[in-house]
Amino acid sequence: MSKKISLTRYLVEQQRVDGLIPGQLRLLLEVVARACKRISFEVNKGALGGVLGSAGSENVQGEVQKKLDIIANEVLIEANEWGGHLAAMASEEMEGIYVVPNRYPQGEYLLLFDPLDGSSNIDVNVSIGTIFSVLLKPHDHPGVTTEDFLQPGAKQVAAGYCIYGPQTILALTVGDGVAMFTLDREQGSFVLTDENVRIPEDTKEFSINMSNLRHWDPSIRRYIDECLAGEEGPRGKNFNMRWIASMVADIHRILSRGGVFLYPWDKREPNKPGKLRLLYEANPMGWLIEQAGGAASNGHQRILDVEPTALHQRVSVIMGSKNEVDRVAQYYAEAETAGQ
Ligand code: FBP
Image 1 (cartoon, rainbow, N blue to C red):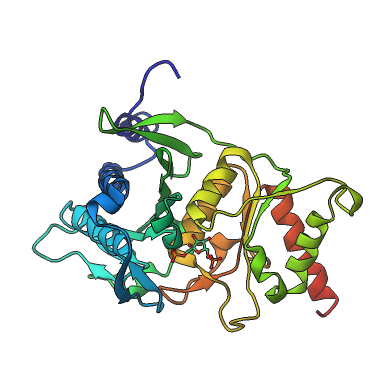
Image 2: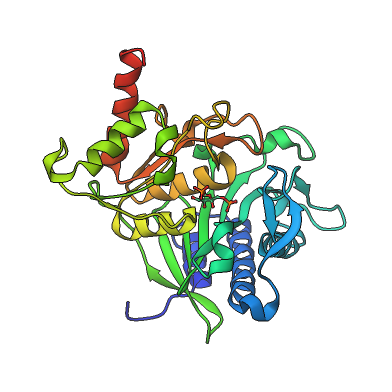
């Protein structure tokens, strides 16, 4: 890329030249990016900033919160509450929605986020990230309710993540493909480093927590067994496996070079549809993947078409290279037909 294009300039062009995003959304995305920049600096401080380790509290899902989970959540709330672009926010780390206090101007957008995805990797210096999704507040009533957030992923108007790894990279879609911006720490700004990101339709790489193998349903076992069988098996090719245990890092790899990511339903908690959260993780990542030419399914339907019924709803996730995702969906369909 010959000239440096900042995130600000990219968004202005999306607004002015292409008419793709309204001004309020542009400003909102700039605030989210600024918050991610701050989180990135906190992450970088590590033990020197006293940000590692557990906070000694639990979130709404009963998971132990890390100090950085709480810091990242606060940074996102503080950065966004006064800008005038938002009506309310919802976070994986908070039980209920956060309505913008009426001392600040109210906007028409809803922001949803997982402030720090991959918490188990925080203390071991492995990539983690922030995932975000933006919806429009329904106009048919005053005020904001939890139900306003329960919109299918297909209604998102922007989605992205910021990965805090060897580089800090922000990936974004506003429905016109996926662009990536690398944080230039000397300039203090995100610079466009990849545009029109495309995921190859085929892959030889899968990403799943193999330690759960004995808990999976027959369709996922069949798919993984066939990958493991390699050249001698029905797929006729060898597969590689990668599992970082930060969804943001595993999806970033898939957007960069293809692959398929699976976090399926399993028998340990049969009443939970999956581990990952629909509104904070699966929807934004699913839209990014689709915008890059991939697919995102829960095995039975497109993730972006799942109608949410609760803020912290979970979902089974299979996303990435299209032909692999379609294959898994086909295995589910065959199992259903066979009455399994
Ligand atoms: P957090 O939001 O608590 O970090 O959980 C999500 C996640 O870390 C994903 O990023 C990752 O894919 C998964 O959990 C790993 O979980 P496990 O190690 O239990 O398989």
